[in-house]
Image 1 (cartoon, helix red, strand yellow):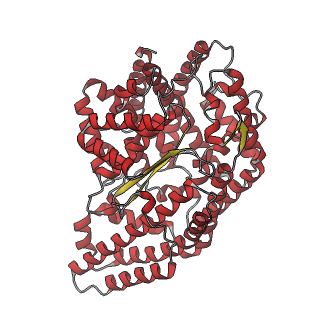
Image 2 (tube, helix red, strand yellow):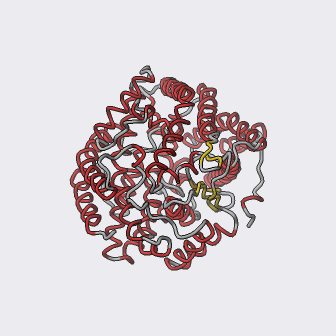
Length: 561
């Protein structure tokens, strides 16, 4: 197998790609029997998988270096041609749905595939192609704008990722300085960020209206594959999170204030938990990768060898560099049957989190790579995040090898998981407000954010930071710009990951077996059915959320630090 750097970066040629799709479309229309129709479908899916791989290679290279001209041009070309290619893809799907051999193919693949396709064709029409291109351009502008940060601090030029390390410094003055620099940069691009978002909101709303939806939320839910619940179901769930986890997050925050020996938790104290500093990794990138390899080999031969493959074939990019976009992700290359992990190490505990969280995603893609129906290889996003978040907990026994103060890491990690839930629900309610009130002004939006912070995170103190006091924290949350309504998925998955962790404490073998089974199921079922098949509790049921919260908070209280 080739190393990632040897994967060819191909500029997408829309004429050749569309001609190939038209050939498969003609074959399907003229299929002379059931088997020939099915073979055409399989050939077409392989072609789409190869195209997906080429697109992902372009995306990863651009993410690693947004200043490289080759990457910029390849990404721009992809932005222009993908909606045109999608129009032909939709034509093939429609022909598949209408085919006289549909029943035969459906028996081969399962009816869920056709349910997916029936919903997919509702989310696209050639009349929105120009809007899809514009949406991608705006999203790329947002990413490039944040990646452009060059902030002088500590004798070096920092970007937003590298500056995060200083925002966790034990010295309160350093934390304050670094936080001020971070938010000063955000304030310097505030107008552009606000304009980009406003354009995105109106553009998405118009696309939804063009397709016959009442609002963009309905379209977004179908695009995310949410077929067994809707945003009206999510509303009472968010209220459950506010009712159950906001009080717990408040208690956890009060404990942190006491440990830090301060009167009030200021905005520059939010990233630290101990007066002498957060638990930090024992070593550099090479050390952490070596320890991760040992950990995964101990978990199992297969998972260990897979991790080594990721490293040996350069299928990870972990170090923060100039021009590299913020954050972390995993993507999959179907052509090569391997994933890729993208991250920005900065010398904090988040580096270890990446080696567990993103590797959890990667391992799931490896476990389900041989599922015969390609559309079933990956589940919807709220299920995908179970694999990643659960792996973070399954790695707890090995944290002694990563940290000098492993108990602190485990306790702080669990605390962060609980305090995250209200924030995740808040992001979702904010987005619901935005897309149900598309003509709201920037001032309306930031006022709404402030209102929601009081509801979900009353312990937050933004005093002294004009940018945060105005209610603009959301502008640094990339999902709000790039992946609308994705964020609530993390909260669903967190509740499932808590269950796997609780089971792991009782019986590791049983928990690992459950985790493996979940990974190998891929996306054969819609979300709620997948939970049922995996014996995980439905997060929409109040007693389930209460039970999980009670047990996990008790574990937290009993943890040594």
